[in-house]
Length: 429
Image (cartoon, rainbow, N blue to C red):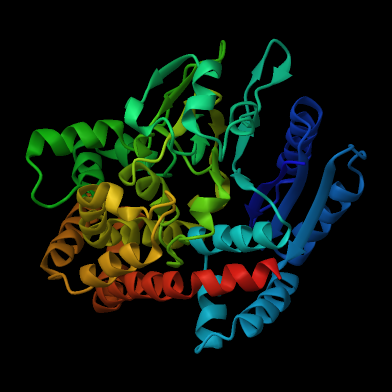
């Protein structure tokens, strides 16, 4: 039996998404004979979580589908048992990195990875609560259609089933390690208002996630492509490609990983940092592990809490922390690309120690580039005025803390990666 984990981390009301996710699980069970563990990791408030509980209780029984709904209290209790079994030297630090008090896109997915290991799943398929499935010919367009058949199998076996192959024949014996697509609809990062207010400011700010030494034309091209996903054109028919998947072509709301990826290296557990959950996409790409890139894109939308008086500064802070994180990630990504096959052992499994070394190396980088980034954000947001200027005032007061936190986030990722094999082993037990 192919047991898989279809996962939805959430901290907001999303009963409709849970219902749709359950339908996708049923599709996977019926069409592919999979045993699907639907995992809803719920960090929402009590009232919202109670509504989710009622939604799940009302779901029809589907053969081959089991739903697990865990609030943070239950997740924390389980993590404490796993951490104790793993015998880690700093158990409280491990718990904080796995279940931090603040929003962490990487940590919530890391919890899904460990729980999938505990459930005996061969793959994790992640969706997001602020997205929905497209429809075509009256039916939902489920990404699992392309995700399930080939994960973990040699790429050569998948080649006859895809529309086209763009893979070096020398890699055909390597396992298919991810399958994914992107999204259509609104920008993946909720900064469209900046572009509406001032196109030039938008280009200045978004360009800050490029390496500081890139030429202007390359940075501008990156800005035009950033956060746009697959555009707005709806699904009209299937297309899939066997390739080494470009991280810019897929999104974490529409991704599936084979266990040999996520059971070896975790995502960065950084808090309040957009994009911190994309690390494994780069690792799989740079290690030249094959994947399937398809066009069953998910429809993205923005929830209104990001634009409230409290939600706006919190979200903008996550965006700024993303910009600061790129000093370290670009360094690591460049060196992972240089390492290539050296990221793998003789069984074609990712070597965690190779990743840890690069993370630790990056923490010694000069922070001058990040100081420059903060200066540019300050200037740009003050040009926009209003609540952007007010946020710039807050940013100025947190300046040193943000610089320190960005470096500490990378150290935390290295620490968690070192301890990850023990955590996975303990979770399986």
